[in-house]
Each structure stands twice: as structure tokens, then as C-alpha cells.
Image 1 (tube, rainbow, N blue to C red):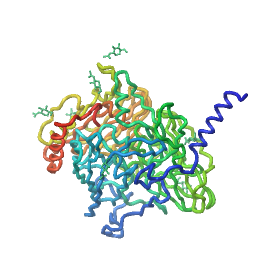
Image 2 (image 1 turned 60 degrees about the horizontal axis):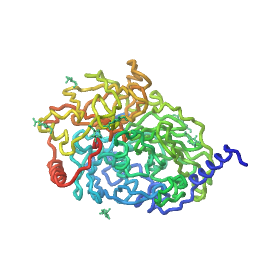
Image 3 (image 1 turned 90 degrees about the horizontal axis):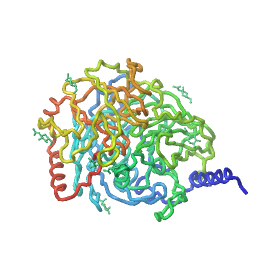
Image 4 (image 1 turned 180 degrees about the vertical axis):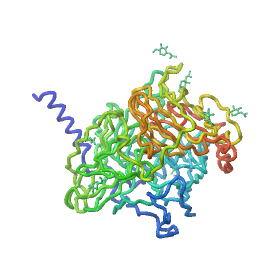
Length: 595
Ligand SMILES: *[C@@H]1O[C@H](CO)[C@@H](O)[C@H](O)[C@H]1NC(C)=O
Ligand SMILES: *[C@@H]1O[C@H](CO)[C@@H](O)[C@H](O)[C@H]1NC(C)=O
Ligand SMILES: *[C@@H]1O[C@H](CO)[C@@H](O)[C@H](O)[C@H]1NC(C)=O
Ligand SMILES: *[C@@H]1O[C@H](CO)[C@@H](O)[C@H](O)[C@H]1NC(C)=O
Ligand SMILES: *[C@@H]1O[C@H](CO)[C@@H](O)[C@H](O)[C@H]1NC(C)=O
Ligand SMILES: *[C@@H]1O[C@H](CO)[C@@H](O)[C@H](O)[C@H]1NC(C)=O
Ligand SMILES: *[C@@H]1O[C@H](CO)[C@@H](O)[C@H](O)[C@H]1NC(C)=O
């Protein structure tokens, strides 16, 4: 008789053999709809789009990543990049388990937005969500929106939701460059599929040969987002949401034998994984994006060193590593030299959800093939031995430094904001940030009220007004055991310090602190940040979709005097009139914070 341990090992091995295979059992259309990401036909990207005027040979002229302050100097190319997005319901099986999803132009992940630094991006979003109908709003993650805060895509904060069967045209400038993504900011809708990559080409002093394009890393859930938050926000429901799988560019296999008995959903165990072609001896640029709902990713490629050159929209002094840690919303641009084998070699690319992320199947893989490798082959490479440190934190703050140095200015105001959970009178577990569990009012965006001179709001909108403060320091105090990726809209903030317990006032490299638009605060720890406030209304929140749904969001007003004087385009008001009319005759099932 086999020992129990032997039996368990053989079951685990069979399961691994099922999910670690490069043979695809489903077509690309059935796993990802119209998306080509993760296939060998996905286009490589050029260093910049060449239909721009090219003063001094580049769309951005003489500006460089080392010599110019990206917040002060931005090229004005006059070029407009136009996109049309239709958001609809659909059925796909990214990991082989068929589910109802929300798709942008029939694709998951949605289409790539590509522009040069200094271009204007226009995206006309059609809300085609039917059966049932539902609002939507799209956030362009990391974009500053300094002259256009009404295009930031946060419903109840910067706009009303886009009404079903109507459209709204977002128009904003690509004032920073690098890698990012867009995603719905309406409830936890983006985890259902409303997301896609953005690449803004800009100067880089680092040499590479091939731009492989976006690599989206995302935990994946088999249930629809609305059902997940409904269960989470039920009396005595659990705030802990467990993901079913982990995807690279929307793909991964799933062991269908683990589906609950009685679940008759169609499921194919070898749906197909993402594949990448590397040119032997050449250096490749990979644009990593954590586009998940919750999980912290640790990305690596077997036997290859990664050179990190940008974090979020911030170019950094290059550093070498074998693993990059990304919380939800964070990005990293890495260079990888294909020099770890011969032209017929193949390797596993891996992205592991950390121990801090509740997950049934945390380990995503994709296959990397050198030029002459057989693309049907299953790689046999060995993983780096770099154990998860288990602290649920980003890689050490001192590891890297922004390429363009900016010294930390003295703050004009400092405040603490605590993270807590509590049970409300219906026994629903919710999050409190800075003392309030946020709930938005879709019909009354704060930005429009502020623009009309109204600065008096219900407490549950969790608004903080910073009046004429120029630089605000916020010490996030995490009073619970769970880590959170903190995201501030409209800014790259300075990261002063992050660690366990309370902050002792230490600042890492005040001459040039790290800057990002998302940073992890560990469980029972602190995160000290500071930002040079740009006039507008900006969400500051946990980027875990489930936590934001549970109220973990605050709304910051910066320079209200200037907000009052902004000339907001009439389309923003019209979008609200459409929504007001629709919501008068239709039930808006807002069971969560709304964001
Ligand atoms: C709108 O959604 C419906 C139902 O999901 C779908 O059949 C139709 O193709 C969509 N229309 C467009 C233009 O995408
Ligand atoms: C990173 O490693 C490569 C070799 O893989 C080396 O050429 C380069 O100098 C290293 N860069 C840094 C910043 O250490
Ligand atoms: C990812 O998970 C695999 C499988 O458990 C493991 O072999 C590998 O070391 C992990 N990699 C990292 C970077 O944590
Ligand atoms: C508790 O929170 C849930 C979810 O936000 C909400 O639906 C319910 O009305 C709240 N109960 C009370 C008594 O406020
Ligand atoms: C909340 O839960 C407690 C303990 O489980 C129970 O005694 C109480 O009746 C519940 N209250 C409501 C409003 O459900
Ligand atoms: C400001 O807006 C809030 C929320 O809509 C409303 O309750 C309040 O009456 C408004 N105040 C003024 C002075 O209009
Ligand atoms: C800075 O913001 C705080 C918090 O709202 C406020 O109390 C203070 O008056 C503001 N200072 C200035 C100079 O506006």
C-alpha cells in the first residue's frame, strides 16, 4: 500500500503536470476573446510611434529621462490618439473555467492604448453592459490629469458613471511616460475583466533591442465580481476573498478536478498558457503590470536576471534582481538578456502570488522560447531559489532610486490616517480609513459640487480638504494584519518610509526618495508618503478591489480655490444628466462603496 505521503505527492505531481503544460486545449478566442496578448502573434512595440513630428529625431525632441523634470517639462506634440471602447458582457474561459465576464471590445485583457509622451489620448467609452444593465467609469491609472481632473474616471468623485447605452469621451494628456493600465473604477467591476494595458513611449538612456510589450499579472476568480462582493458584504460574511487562479496576460491552466462537486460549469484543464519568443543574445524590455484584484505578485524568469529600469511611471537607476515584487496597480519595466542558453532553449516565466494573498492556485507560468526553440515544447528549466520573505512588503526601499532626482520638500501639513476594520450594525465587516467607511454617491461627484463652491458633504464620502497646502505628508497606520497597496490618484508620491510598527520619523534618502503611484503598507505597519498637491479631487485608497468595495477609500481636495475656477467641459454635466435620468427609472444596485 502506498503511504499517505506518497499518495499526496503523486496527486500533487499529477496536478502540476496538468497545469504545467505548454499544449493548449482551447482556442485563443475561447480563452481571451479578441485579445492577442500572450500569443506568439502579439505585436512587439516600436521605441516610439513615428507618425508624430520628430524634432531632433524624437517626438519629445531634446528632452531626456535623466536631464528633465517630467513634472515640469512635457512635450506638446499636438498629436491625438483616438480609441473607441465598447464594454459588454461576454463568456470566456481564460484558465479553462468558463465564466461570465465584462469585456472591452470583446477582449480580455482589453486593447492596448499606445501613445508618445506629450500626445493627447481620447477614448470614447460606450457602455454596452446589458442583462442586467450597469454603470461604468474608466480610470487611467497613473495619469496625472492635472489640467483635467474630471477625466480621472472615479465615479462619485470625478464624474457620474457612464449610463448604460450611452457613451462618454475621455480626453487627457500623456504627461508621463512608461507602462500603465486602465481599469473600471465602478464597484469591483474591473476584476470581471474591464481592464487593459497602456504604453506611453518616452526617452530612455538604457539600451535594449526588443520591446515585448505589456505582461499583465493578475489573480483570477471564477465567480462574478458582484456575487463575490455580495457574499463578502453579507451579515457575518468574510472580508477574505480567495482567488481561484493566477494569470499571465490573461492565461493559465487550471486543474478542473478541483472544481466543487456539483459545479457543472464547462472546464478544460489545459486551456493554454502565455508564450513569448525571445531573440537569442538580444535584450528584451518587458512591461510588467499587476492588474489583479488583490494578490501581490513575485515575478521571475528561470535562469535570467532582470534589470529594473522603471517603477510605475518613474524611470529608476537600473538595478539587477532575480525577482520583482508588485502589489496591485504597480508596474515595473525590466530588461532581460536572452543569453541563458542556446537558440533552442526554453524557460519558465513565473509569477507567484505571495503568502499574503488568499489563493487556491498561486503560481502562474508562461513559456519563453528562444528563436529556434520548438514552440510546442514544455520548458524544463529550474526556478530561482528566492523564497518569499513573507513580509507582504515591496522590495526594500533603498534598492532603487529615481533617475531624475527630486529632493523632498518640507511638508506644509502632516496627518495620520489609520486603517481599521469593524462590523456595522448589520454584522457586515467593513473597512475604515481615517475614521470613516467610505460610500460614494454616484449622482453627486465631489468635483462638480466643489466646482460650484459646495464644500459641505456627508461624512460617508470621507472627504479631506487640504485648502492651500502645497505639500502634504500622510502617515498611513495599518492597525490590522493584512497588507494594502495604497494608491493616490493624480500624483507620484514620495515614499519616505515603510516598515513594521509605528514610524520613527526616519526618511530613506531625503535627497531623492523613491516615487511611485502605488506602494504596499505591510500588516501592522506604517507607510509614510508625501505629495506635492495638484489642484483637483483625488482618491487615495487601497487598490485591493474587495477592500475598496468595503469602504477603504478617502477623497482628497487639493487647492479648492483653484478647483472652483476650473472650466469643466459641458459633456461632464451631460453625463450626469444622463445618469440622473437613468437612475430615476432603474435600480442602481450599489451594495458596496461604489468604487
Ligand atoms: C453589446 O452587448 C451585446 C450583449 O452582450 C453583444 O451581443 C453585442 O455584440 C455588443 N455590442 C457591441 C457593439 O459590442
Ligand atoms: C546587471 O547584470 C548585467 C549582466 O546580466 C550586467 O551587464 C550589468 O552591468 C548589471 N547591471 C547592474 C546595474 O548591476
Ligand atoms: C514560484 O513558485 C515556484 C513553484 O512553487 C517555485 O519553484 C519558485 O521558486 C517560486 N519563485 C519565486 C520567485 O518565488
Ligand atoms: C452595513 O453595511 C452594508 C454594506 O455596506 C450595508 O448594506 C448595510 O446597510 C449596513 N448596515 C447598517 C446598519 O448600516
Ligand atoms: C450579529 O451577530 C451576533 C453574533 O453572531 C448576533 O448575536 C446578532 O444577533 C447579529 N445581529 C444582527 C443584526 O444580525
Ligand atoms: C452641498 O452638497 C450636498 C451633497 O449633495 C448637499 O447635501 C448640500 O445641501 C449642498 N450644500 C449647498 C450649500 O448647496
Ligand atoms: C492644510 O490642511 C489642513 C487639513 O485640512 C488644514 O487644517 C490646514 O488649515 C491647511 N493649511 C493650509 C495652509 O491651508
